[in-house]
Length: 352
Image 1: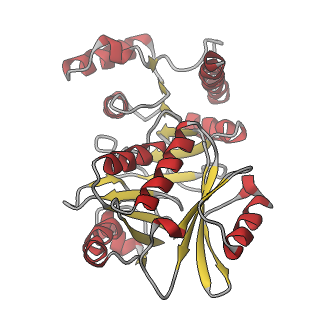
Image 2: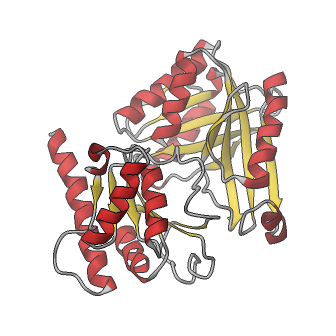
C-alpha cells in the first residue's frame, strides 16, 4: 500500500488530478483483495492493479466518465470462470469497485492525502473515512477524514464523531466496509503497516512456509500458474492464493514495497530466474530464492547478462534460509522463517 501512496504523492506534487479505483468488496476467486487500489491518470495509464482482465479494463473505461463529471461511481463486476478464461485469466469472481475523482485543485483534498502520506511514511496505522453522498456525488477533501488510535484529522461533525467512535471500539480489527449513519454512507478503510510475504511457487515447501509465515503475523500471498497446486484446499491458512498466467510476466507489481518479503520456490530454474529478474526491480525488503550454490551461480550469470549488476544480486538470499542443515519441507520452512525474522528484527534494531 505504500507503493500506491508514492504514486499518489507524485500526482499531487505535479498538480495532476486522477481517478482512484478501490475494491470495496470481493467474492469467489477474484485475484485481488478488498482495499486494493489502482491509480488512473488522465492519459489512462495506470499505477497499481485491481487484478487485470475484463474488470480492470472496464474500470479504466469507466474512468472516462469520472474525469468528465467528477462524480464517483460504484460498479459491480461479475465474472464467471468462462468469462475469466476468455479474458486470459484463470478463475472468476465478483468485485465491487469505487472510482473517485481526486481533484488536485482542491486544497483540502491535497491536505488530507498529504497527511495520509505522512502517516504512512511514519508507519502510523490509520483509518480513512470517506463520505458518499447520494445528493452530491462529488467527493471533496471536506468529505474525507483520518482517524488514528489517538488522533483525528478533518472537520468533525456529529455523524463523523459517531463513525470515529465505532472505529475505535476495535481499531486493530477494522476492515474495509461501507457503513450507514442516518441517510449518509461512509467508507471505512484501514491503512495498517502490514508486512507481507509473497511466495512464488505452490509446491510442498511453499505449503509449509505459508503455514508458518501466517502464524508469525505476515500477510501471506501464494502464487503459481497451476490451479491444481494454487488452491484453498492446499493453502487453507494463506490470506490470498492466486493462480497467475505465467511467471515470466507478473504484470504490475507496484504492490511490492519495503514491507514486502519475497520467497521464490517455483518448480524450476527458468521460473525462478524469471521471478527474480522482476523482483530485483522492486523495493522488497527481502528476496530469497531456493536452490543450491550451482543453481544460484547459473541463474546469477543469466541475470547479469540481462543488465543487472553484482550489487543488485547482493540483495538476494540464496541458498534461502538460515543454515540449520534443513532437509525436510518442514525444516526448510523453519529455516526460511528464521531468516525472515532475522531480517525483520535486524532492520527494526538498526532504526533504534
